[in-house]
Amino acid sequence: MSMKTIPHRLYLTEDQIPKQWYNLRADMKEQPEPIINPATGKPAAVEDLYPVFCKELAKQEMDANTRYIDIPEEILDMYKIYRPSPICRAYQLEKALGTPAKIYYKFEGNNTSGSHKLNSAIAQAYYAKEEGLKTLTTETGAGQWGTALSEACSYFGIDLSVYMVKVSFQQKPFRKAIMETFGGHVMASPSDTTNVGRAILKEDPNNFGSLGCAISEAVEKAVTTDGCKYVLGSVLNQVLLHQSIIGLEAKKAMEILGEYPDIIIGCAGGGSNLGGLIAPFMQDKLTGKANPKIIAVEPASCPSLTRGKYAYDYCDTGKITPMAKMYTLGCTFKPSSNHSGGLRYHGMSPIISKLYHDGYLDAIAVEQTKVFEAAVLFAKNETILPAPESAHAILGAVEEALKCKETGEEKTILFGLTGTGFFDMTAYTAYNEGTMTDYIPTDEELKKGFDALPKIPGFQE
Image: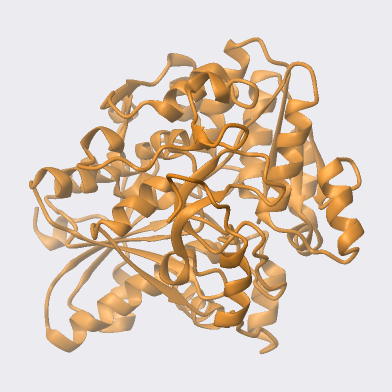
């Protein structure tokens, strides 16, 4: 297909929506380290996860062998409301940059949650319904996951409690409003509704929260409430599995266009969007079919990959979840309150962490003022107001495109546009008014989190 015939946007047909998720672990040469049961200090069995997770989701979490997993028809029916999502050619951005590179992005913002999170929310709510559950609980940072899960739970008739990181709760009141519109019950975390929340507030009454804290509260509610289970929007193996639909659609669309990306870029917080986007391309890399450059872009204020330690850590601040080996800043790490976007989790998906540790992908950390500069550039040229999270990937794509301008190379770049920024106007206002500031934690600040990492005989270095 010649350049002149490549459309600005390409939508697959409804019957081209993938019917199976792709399990990246089935092709990994070395598996991530096993998760550890904190009660025993030994690798967790699937049964150990049943008190917290739905049984089918627990099985998916532990499955390292099944390459493709069928997507149930009920999930596909809801996917068809907003999928397939388009792959877009950023012609105007290319022109503004004066680059010979071809820039594509996979846009996941065409649903009410405004993000990719709905892909896993639907799956997790469905499996909860199949198990006969009436109640779920979760956390949310910037609000996309809580919104998506509120939508999915409303669709399947399930009650939902959402613990929202307090600083985001305060910055984004309309996220709370939309979650409540779909029937979600939203609380600022840390809250006084759980033992973990009360303990954190007793130590620091002005604590502005973290994802680790919100996870602790949500898990506590799940294990102390009959008929309630916990669901998580990122990090977990099961979530990256569900999000593989992003990459599967993207690869199919690029094949139709006669393209294959030289560079693939995703924002990185917990790893769900990045893992989903890169999944089938990483399969090619692992099996020797292709060798794309893959870049994770994370915030300099929460730099788990670029400055974290590859070690076992708790997935929550309250230290009640299983321990995973991942790149982490320590479960007690709290991003600065001036950090406007999401991507504020202290650790990184064990799958992404292992791939990064083994050299299959690169990572960079960027300051938020530069992120918003890229966001505004993109919005002015492509007419989409991106979420701050997505703008990290935009910045990465811009930097790679400018390198092509310097060298004259006509590389093909693909990045993930995870969603829209219409609930992030406080941050955009701060950037536009020049009051936004950057924060980069010092080595001394990070050391506090590293010093608190758990010691697990036989597992922790």
